[in-house]
Amino acid sequence: MNERAAPRCSIVIRAYNEEKHIGRLLTGILQQTVHPVEIILVDSGSTDATVAIASRYPVQVVSIQPDEFTFGRSLNYGIQQAQGELVVIVSAHVYPVYPDWLEELLRPFGDPQIALAYGKQRGNATTKFSEHMQFAKMFPEESIPRQKRPLCNNANAAIRRVLWQQRSYDEDLAGLEDLEWASWATAQGYYLAYAAEAEVIHVHQETPRQIYNRYRREAMALKNIRPHEHFHLWDFIRLYVSNILSDCWHAVGERVLLREFMGILKFRFLQFWGTYRGFALSGPLTGQLKQIFYYPLGIKSLRAVPRRKVKPINYPAGHAEELIFPGEGADPEG
Image 1 (spheres, rainbow, N blue to C red):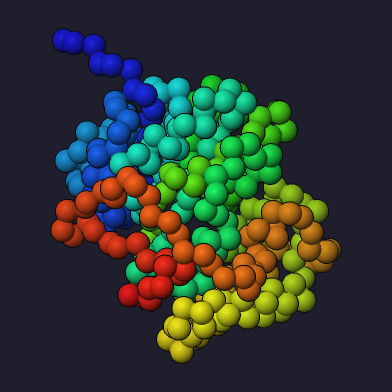
Image 2 (image 1 turned 180 degrees about the horizontal axis):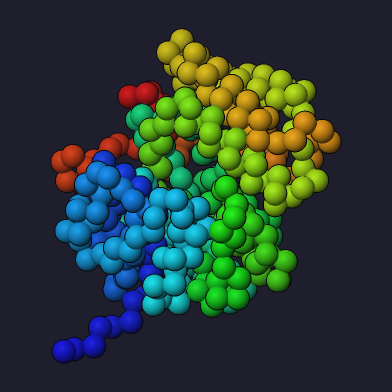
């Protein structure tokens, strides 16, 4: 039996009932310019065809019980199985746009002071307009080779396994385990890197309750990570209003305001009411991170995104979803 070549990286995917998305992600991974890679799917009790679909690909499937699941625990379990020195972390409902996604995501690790790299996220034709604005604010068009603030996102990121061995993910947090780990890494003198060319489409097909619960969960986690941070009722009101105004400004520029107006009101209400419910009701709203999480994009026009010279991945029928992003002159609701 021939020995396998050591993987250039290991990819850990967290999944629960992702039959609509997992095949597309795995197809995109297999078309990457980086080889060989190790793919580990951590399933937390899927009752649909997620595991059956993943089993058609060269994937190691491991499982945890649903009642054992936290984001941190699922990641730690997957990384324990990993052989690569660099571990890529992706959500099951994202997929890479270009075949050099992995190459661009791993490129920053040529700098030995980089602990973590994270890539750009954009929405698709079903993404709510306000979430397009969130993606644009959190994931700009320009890369950041050395970033000291701990902002990152484990839907599209990579870390050094040797550092994870020193400090694993917090398994007790309700969310934002990525921010907590990045805070530790930067406190040790390391940097993060943002790779704008490492682009994925992040498909959020959430019900209103799921949107509310997502932001409530993240606010609870942020409060645990940074106990001095708080969110008043006044913060809810002013951020709700300011984000609506910003979104409407951009929707006017895209000529979709009439179509998007009610969706903007609903999404921003669920976002900030969930945040308000997740935070304590005392103390000032402070901190650079919350400015990024909650403050609006502003009223400056979104410039057109230059097309890359790299040809996008051509997904098979049933897997293809066109990237639609405000600023390209297209209707984000398709």
